[in-house]
Length: 259
Image (cartoon, rainbow, N blue to C red; front, side):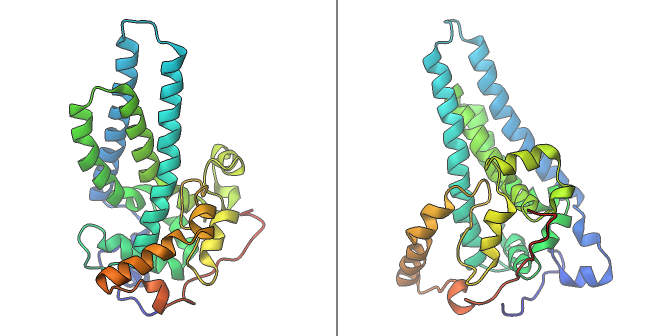
């Protein structure tokens, strides 16, 4: 990968790393946005549950099936969304891109040093997406009274926001993971190292999904993201980074502690 100029305010700033390890820590701003994102998702979930509980007619099995399907759809689409988001961050934009610039820079650095994401505090990793979730979901919480839609929104946005933490867990030695996380990874509910490590192997252009990875096979075998790259290039003339840097990126060993 070509040399990346680091933003001194970036979570993964190499200049800060040379001085101390404060860049692993989340700032007060990170923590505030993370708290807002979590609160927004929990409000959507709580409002959905309250509307269900307050419903006058008895809840029929069909209603419960709808609720389960809405939550499942939110979870599945979050994995797809995480893959598209990860692909876009890896291939387009830069440090000066509004809102997402620091995260783009961080992802590029992550490709050179994959394991270091596991050392970073949660709020610092999730703050950017938490900010977007807060801004987008708050009006929905205020305006919507549809419990099934709110359940979908809560699960979808919650999984999207925490997908970066699921990503970090996929780089974390198994001995350091909570038992519940390990169990969910083993069950395929959350992304595990053996699935995600393929993203860090040449040519570094596949396995972008970071919730569970269930969409990776579809996106990769049918070359869907590659087709997007061609379409965007023809429409805008912008080349994705993977075209000019096909053999770049960091690799990660396979220690017994991880898988």
